[in-house]
Image (cartoon, rainbow, N blue to C red; front, top):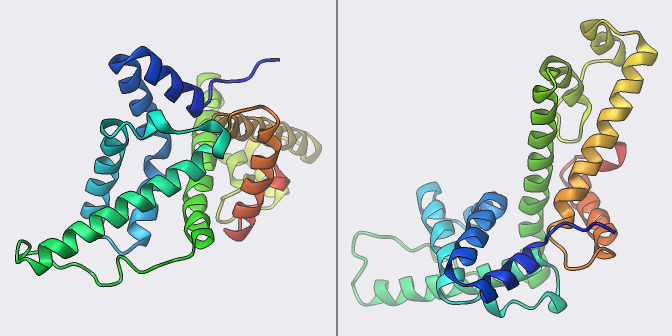
Length: 237
């Protein structure tokens, strides 16, 4: 049975193969998790430029501090590990800034007193998971769109994507069918195929974040719950 390389196995390979593999793992981490990490940091009260710097600093910290090498796939999902590591990093950063503020080392910098406000672990993970879910959705949508473009069907995708999760407002089926020059039954058939294709792409993205195949269904269910909270229904796909 084929199972795609997961972030866990990539990190294990980075540990075993040295700097080159570690750099590649870091690049993949940046590409896939930049947005949820950045959004989570922003939600803690940091300004845009600051959040970008902290996101980059955190990713570099993971590699430089060998944190990724100590990550254990048996202790949970990759997203859970990342959230916990990020909270620890932000806590250390908050303590450092408060110390500098008290010592007069940040005369030009204001530290928000609520940056270090204690929040329950469930609430923290839920906040991070929202960013993770949207990143999964966006990646799957972009990849699906690229496949349509490569097949010369970009125009069709532009219409059909309005009926995928995350779309703000969709036209009626009849209006979309007319725009594409299809009968209503033909349009529904095309839409069904797209939804199945998109859902498979989402599943492929989710599979990259777990350690064993049987966890994919659990993560898909979790993703659905998170998306329902955000008003996006993957079950329709």
